[in-house]
Length: 200
Image (tube, rainbow, N blue to C red; front, side, top):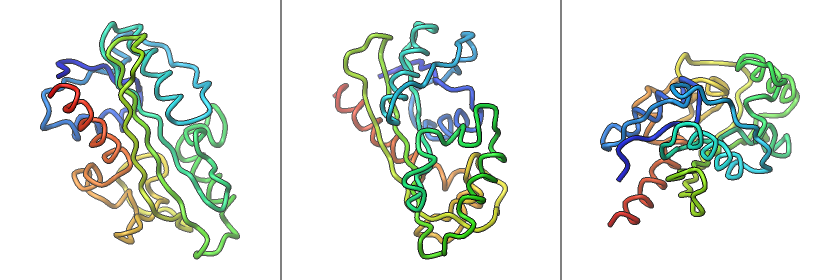
């Protein structure tokens, strides 16, 4: 089992979510920023590819096992956009508010019955930089896109994402609830099961 893992992210929202999800584990997470790690160039064509790229980059600079997340929003009416470009949907210098505004503009004329969307998360864990067998976890959270923003929790597109089973926004969920049912939570649960099997 892992004693210390570097998280391949500078996103404080994601880091907090992982820390909360791992409360029952003996894993100690540290941020890649603690090692002055430059952002990896996300040249992959899928969430899984980008997660592996980021994990290897974080492990290279830290010398530690690394866990990376690549996740995003897939909107059916937009042919899967923003997808792997979710964090930079409105441009490389865009912030979360810019991305949400662009999404609302693109979805303005889409009727309620056609606003289905998924949050997808892929996690990659490498034991060392050139680990030939990264451990992969994937989670999908089904829902739809609202016509306006609501809720104060979370980050990214959470205030626009209507959780399918609950009919509320992701941003309205208490963190402890979100961290049980979200795409990131499902991916993390899948990854942890695989780690336990490898260490059985």
